[in-house]
Image (cartoon, rainbow, N blue to C red; front, side):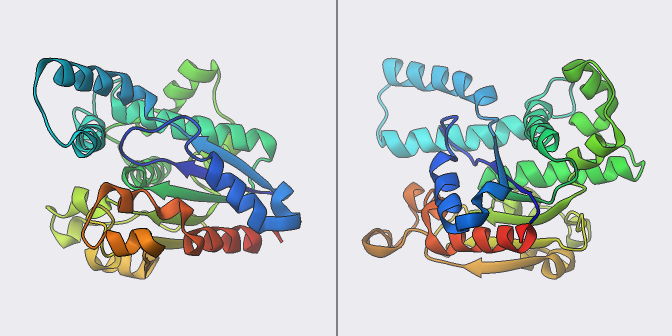
Amino acid sequence: MTQVALITVHGMGETPPNYADALMDSVRTRMGALAGQVVMRSVYYQKILQDNQQLVWDRTRSQSAVHYDDLRKFVLYGFGDAAGLENRKEIPGSVYELAQGEIARALMSAHATRPGMPVVFLAQSLGCQVLSSYIYDAQKAAEGRPVGAGIWRNIGLWAQQVYGRALTASERSFLGAGSCAGLVTTGCNIPIFVAAHKEMHIIPIRPPTSLFKWINFYDPDDALGWPLQPLSGGYRALVEDRAINAAGGVLGVMLKSWNPLSHNQYWQDDTVLDAIAVMLRRLAA
């Protein structure tokens, strides 16, 4: 049997540090006897943004009259995350760079358990764009092409600042998603970030390994979750889109049109959880 890593990346909006605990418990249950072979890590970048957003929200509530508190807060945190990550991302110490650093730290922790093991990423919502940009930048750096922002602009300098030493060849490859064999995206926002570009410029990541498989789950009623195959030929060849009813059951009947609740239900959906377990079993058996 082989160890395999599951690395989660959260989405937009107010997010606690333990956001992935319930999902990981569900995956362990589905893995049965193979659960011990799965090394689980969660990326948490929301702390970079959340204190500032909370300050704006508190001032708004105390100094102004506003309605639809839950929806308004979802928009403030959610779209504030997206704007913050993309704004001035090329400057040193940008939110973009700090978020990439959190992904690298999670991978570094997994690498310490077993170097070179297969990695499956699970990303939700805005986390899909954050992770895709990270892998895309890493692949550019590996090819010797210039990277304009983030830690892969100078991964050696980042490692020296964080760990006080250079990365080994194994660590650098692992941090660059060199052993990534699976990617599951849910409620993916990538089309929002690339739709204004000509199709010839909408280029996905390259498959990191020969085993690589990308499954993208989206709910047709979720206005923030999108299929990826329509973006370009590259995405059509790389991604398998699967439409699901993420809200499900009675809640699904109630939510005929989009509601923030439908965007946050993917990781409780049996179809998504089963697919993650199947992907992990394929690599761990």
